[in-house]
Structure formats: structure tokens, C-alpha cells
Image (cartoon, rainbow, N blue to C red):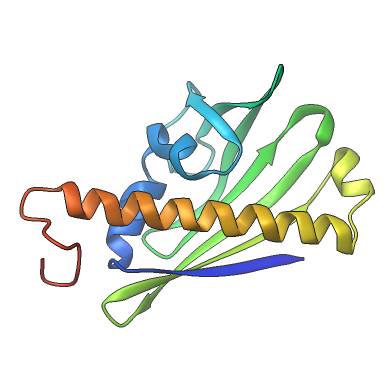
Length: 157
């Protein structure tokens, strides 16, 4: 399993606002170039969104479905990448003093990725999670800085 964590220097309600923003998905999910469409009221259980991944001249479309959510502490997603298969992505947001500790746990479920899941796949997921969590922190902390009265983005700002 690929489990990684990131300290985000904002309260977990600020992290949740980004996770709950369907339009912000491509801003923090590593490799995603665009998010759009979908159904339901994101991030309610059963809601979905569509996304695109572009790698040079190649592109891949997929969808993400909310399987479970407990505001503001947990968002469990099933990511469907077509021929590559599906993955379970569990995002936990814990209070950490005035900040948040975000923990991502991802595991391939079906398809090609699920059939070859091994330590090498987990190593790639660790690299991806490092980028994804850093991007999530940048988006959350950036929103706080850019909000009226946001200042340095620190507690009480």
C-alpha cells in the first residue's frame, strides 16, 4: 500500500473546502490536466467528476466517484482510469494543532494496475502522492493567502 502524509498549514476546514470543490480537483491531483462534468453534488457519496490526463501527445480520460465522505475528516474516492483500472484513494484530514495532517492511502483495485500491484507500483504511487500532497498544500495555503484579510495564511490571519 502507498500511504503518505503532508502537513498543511491551515485548519482542516480549509483543506476540506478544496477537497469539496469539484473544479479544484485538477489543481491538486498530480497528473490531472483538467476536471469537468460528472454527476451529483460533489463530494456527497455517489457524486462523480470526469478528468483528463495529458502526457505529451497522449491523453487519457477517467472518472472519480465519491464512495464515502465524513466532513471534514475523510474523503474516500474510487478513481477509474479506463484500461489502467480502478484505485481506492482514501484521504484523511486530521487536526494537527492549528494546522492539518493530510494522509493519503491508495491501493489499485481492478484492471492492469490491480493485477500487477507490487512494491514497484507502490514506489511510483509514493512519488505521485508526494507531488499531489504538495500541490494540495499549495492550493489550500494559497487560497488562505489570497482571501480578503488572508495575510500570511497563518492561524488567526
